[in-house]
Image (tube, rainbow, N blue to C red):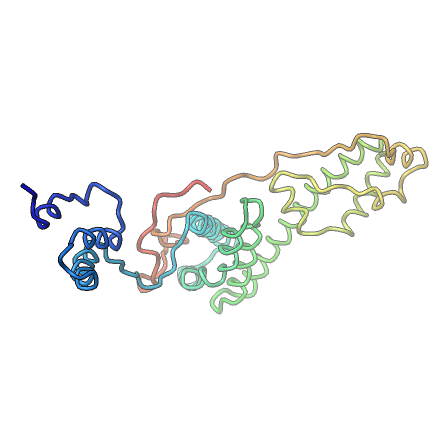
Length: 285
């Protein structure tokens, strides 16, 4: 006894095969001998199409990746650190602390947006100087504050200038040490080299040092203070070039959760200022 066409079709278990719905419908059509191909295809394709999962397009919304979240936490950590320093040095009163923390809480995302973007697009932590960018932002916020008085602003400026002076001493001292090792500088030459390097100072040198590399002390910069024998020894084209590295610069930065409000002197940012409601576990950059 030959099974009916309906029985043959019912015995097909299409769920066991990875068959595209359209191809499945066409296969069913080929078994329907007494129905016209056009009519059979039209009848089969509708239920087959229903098998396909519906695709729902979510509305466009910015999605923060792990690097972006890490950058935001680092920035907030550095801001929190600077807030404590400002209060410690400038002795903010409650009103000044409130005004400053509210301003920063409402502006930090927009003011440092380029920092998040730079880190997201870079390949490594060392590509972005978070400390310097936050420091500049904090300086701008303090200067723009109407409640912080001129004397306090001057105190903060002096703090930042002192930081830069010490950074220059640290980096240039290391550069002179490398040059002394290579050329055999005398104490007088080391003092002269310090002046030459100070004239060439670049903020990028501190960034390089902080991330683990000592800037090169180029021969052309200090050649005027070298003796003929030092120039010959140091400029030996057959010599093996040495790169000196330092342990300066941490691989991580202070981090603050996106769920926690900024605070200074026990005063937190106003509840009316929106902060990130959800912050996933801290990613490893």
